[in-house]
Length: 467
Image (cartoon, rainbow, N blue to C red):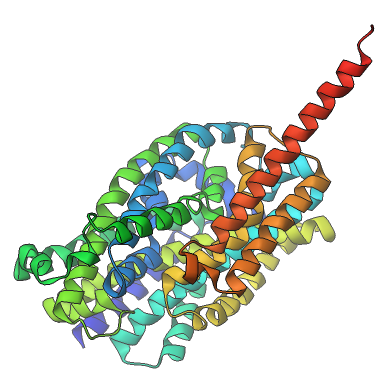
């Protein structure tokens, strides 16, 4: 009863704060970027925002779940993938300084590939964001199932309704105001559970009772799995929600520094999450792998502390869900609908985003119901973004481009290989995601077209030279 009261009180208070600080936005620009850039100038808030996007409920539950049911390779892989995040911060983020006027991700690809690029980018961003939203709904649904003892389907619907309500009443100022609170709650939730578990059980006892095959890097099979998982995760860091956050902020330098700081904190968080999975495996090896963190809360904490930590977990999932709902709405209106049916009235565009929010939330519930593992859900849905779009978007930021027709064929090749790979469940056989395979194919096709074009131009110039 105490746990329920704490969670309900938190939800009511934060909704009240959100309404109080609600920004008076009535256009798509306000909804997506303009107001946030004015309030996100605090470096701590910016780090908190980016870290919340990167961690999310899917990472907290998903990595603990995979460590519990499989091995530490998932945690190791995610840690090594941080190298890709740092490279993005150092090399890619400075290129965004030329795109401050853009609202959506499709505005960037429009520069090189016109409306075809904008629409395809919008579709990929929407599908990827729906996957991340579904992961947050799934996680918060598990939390509500744990708190209130309701069925899985009912908990997902409750989770969806709460996220929709928060998104509807929170203005960008309110979101920014609550970021620091959510960041503190996230740190408590991630750190407290493995810390208390390690203290009460003794981490040495836990490690000694678990087979080394689950965590030891002396195991060649685990090392090989770690490499493949790291490659799969490395292409997922440059996601639509991060790009939207960059476009919403006025300083790419601040974003670059924030991502580097985030990466250092991220490593520590992943270690804590993986330790939680190991401790849960030690305590209750026969329990469901879907809720190791909740099992730990129930085993080691009083109802009051449980309530506080559950509030932290809920705050993370809600914040990440809101970010992805924003991406879905902006990409749908600005990148898909606007190029096809010009919407001249900002109020109409903004109203449409609210309708899209409700529809996308409903779709996310259906997606969440089809995946048992949160990590599997996120990896699969991110393939709709990485396979067709990651390569042309990153290279496009460096003004490296190919013809629009070649872009369409290259993106189609990446997407087709991703779908075929996943349809025949080849990821379970070879241990790499279809998104990675599609991205590699897209990159090779892109580079081949680019090199062929350069050599063709050189050949023409050689022919044109006078004898």
